[in-house]
Length: 180
Image 1 (cartoon, rainbow, N blue to C red):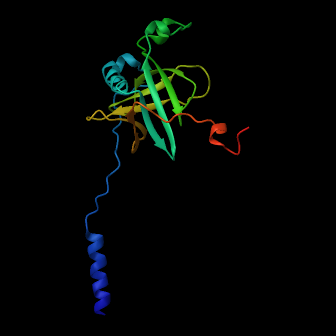
Image 2 (image 1 turned 30 degrees about the vertical axis):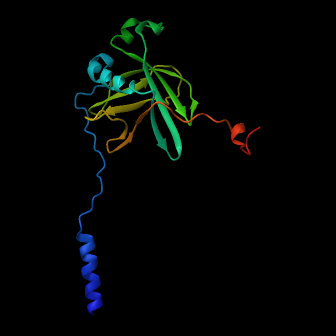
Image 3 (image 1 turned 180 degrees about the vertical axis):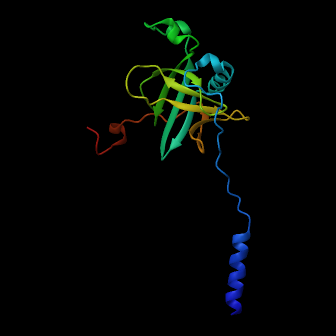
C-alpha cells in the first residue's frame, strides 16, 4: 500500500512539474492587407528584408535531410521587358529568385514582392506566365533580423544566412544504382 501511495505521489509530482516546451510562434494577420497592393505599398519593409537577405550569399534551410537555398536579388527596373500596359507594373519592384536543392540550381524566376497577409513579412510572387508556382512564399524578419519563411499562422521555417551551400553531386558521381 505504501509502495502504491509513493508511486502516486511520484507520478503527481512529475506531472505537476512545469514543462519548458517552447510554444510555437503565432503570426498575426495583417489587418490592412489587400490583394491588389504592390511593392510600393510596403517599400520600407520590403527593402529591409531584401537588404538583410543580401548580407549573405544564400538563405538556407533543411527539410527532411534535403538542403534548400534561395538567393533573392533586386532587379533594375529597366532589366524587365514587359509588353503589356505600363500601368500593370506601376509600383512593382522586381526581384530574381534563384533556388537550389542539394546544390543543384533550379530554374531562375522573375518575381516581385508585395504585402503579405502576415505582419512583418512580404510575399514573393512570381511574374513568369507558366503555370508552376514553385517560388511563391511569405518571408518575414523578426526584431533580431532573423529571416524566416511563414508556412501557416502557427508555423515557420527559419532561414540560415550562409555563404556556402552543398556542392551538387550528380547521380553518376554518387555511384547511384539509378545512374545511366
